[in-house]
Amino acid sequence: MIASEEDLQNALAVKDVVVVDWMASWCRKCIYLKPKLEKMFHEEFADVPLVFVDVNKVPGSVVYSNGIRKMPTIVVYRGGKKVAEHIAAEGGLHALEKVREMMKLTLMD
Picture 1 (cartoon, helix red, strand yellow):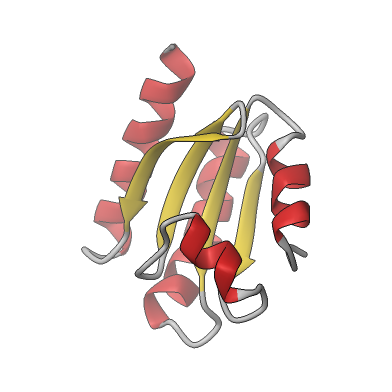
Picture 2: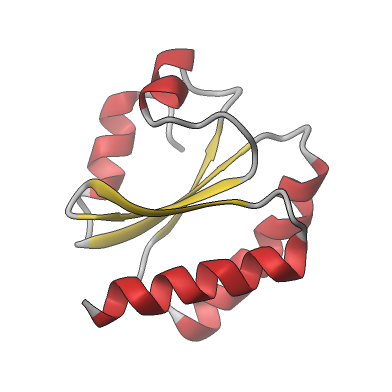
């Protein structure tokens, strides 16, 4: 569980590419999207860690320093740096396609 900036940095250091789903337990879109993201990563991107950060369970400074303003926000990090982001306000299926597209572009580099 990510509870601090140090936890986040440790999670980002596990592999070159790491995806973080910034979410909230009260967010309906977050709840809807989480199992779909887990399934997609298990089936298509099994070698890429998918980390969930509940914005209510980390200090606000962690959320703000990462530029998170809306939930869910899915961020692709490469080498610990943000390289792609999707604010999943458009809905579940569209969000999955955007994340899939971000992943393919990131992994092609």
